[in-house]
Amino acid sequence: MTSPKIVAVRGMNDLLPAQAPLWEAFEAEAVRVLRSYGYAQIRTPILEPTALFRRGLGEVTDIVEREMYSFVDALNGEALTMRPENTAGVVRAAIEHSLLYEGPCRLWYMGPMFRHERPQRGRYRQFYQAGAEALGLAGPDVDAEQILLLRRLWQALGLQDVRLELNSLGQPPERARHRADLIRYLEQHHERLDEDARRRLHSNPLRILDTKNPALQELVEAAPRLLDYLGEASLDHFERLQQLLRSAGVGFAVNPRLVRGLDYYNLTVFEWVTDRLGAQGTVCGGGRYDGLMELLGGKPAPACGFSIGMDRVVDLMRDNAGAAARADCEVYVLHQAGATFELALRAAERLRDAGLSVILHAGEASLKSQMKRADASGAAYAVIVGEREAAETAAAVKALRAADAVAEFAQQQTIALDLLAPSLAKLLRGERAGHAGLPSTAEGRLKQ
Image (tube, rainbow, N blue to C red; front, side, top):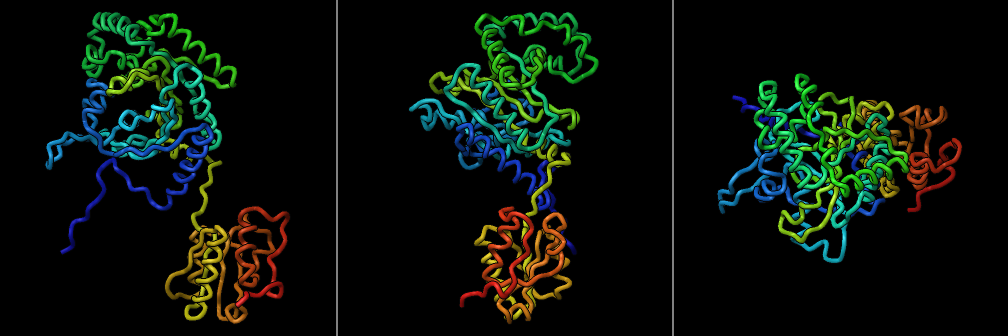
């Protein structure tokens, strides 16, 4: 009797080899851009004390109320949670290890987060975020710099249809005045509120402004605007941010209903959004959280940051006709077993020494069968070590992709083994000008 098949947890997806190149492309560009702005990597645990998120994110947020994967450790009774986001964890680490002792720091992270949500495209129970936190830095200049960083990343990834929305949440006293007036306004229209809005009315009324319910749009459009409650300092901060963005040529729209979903935000909040992903159109969100360090037990320090929904950005890259994925294999090495395998093994190692990604055919099979495998691998070139080539200490090279070689390379050519790796490295790395052919065996022999 066959054992029942075990499958992945719903909403927690496997990342398969065919999908990996786009993820790797995003990760490489993100790391490059983050480093170019002076951010250093930090890695924090997936498991954190539950109290970190209850205190940092807010007891009445959707994440804390309904979405966290929390449990009590049976060994010691400790309440733990799989991180639903990573800003709180980064701030906890900065406090614990005194990272601000010598001054402000810029940190970036990348990894899985966990929320118990209803799975759909762009929203999973295990999802991935890349983010950055600038700790100990006040002022709209840092807010603007992070937005410029993100614009640079979108450009590097070839994403053109993401747009920036901004708002200011002011400071806690300003939000408190607005909150009181907002509750009074919504209470006057209680019968028009949906179940979700009624649940949030007295616990987190600001989130009602972000509702997607079409029946509530007219009501929230007429609600008191937080921007009208901002004091002089908050308005100056917001105006200066907009001025910096205009000066840098960054387009944006002020969205008074943009509130974000976490309690720690103040002043600047922003989102990068797209219309290409349906309801899950936010690909990046961030803002300023000047009170979080003190809230989590550290000395008061200003801070701002953002997180990118990697799953959503990779979806956009996959849909983007200009985002071609790099093949994991550049060269596929074929052989006829026996002594030819030994030479093929040496050839593969030399190609790897030259920085190329190589698959050496495993096992025995006909060259015809191996060539089918080579073509399916995505490799640009097949390197063939048959008995004739082995006798000459050479290899045959055949271009597999029309875009990678001119017509003369489509015909199989023989090359001395000591010239194989440098020649293919030049071709694949674009270092050779023009389209000169591969050198023949007469031009070099392997030094024994």
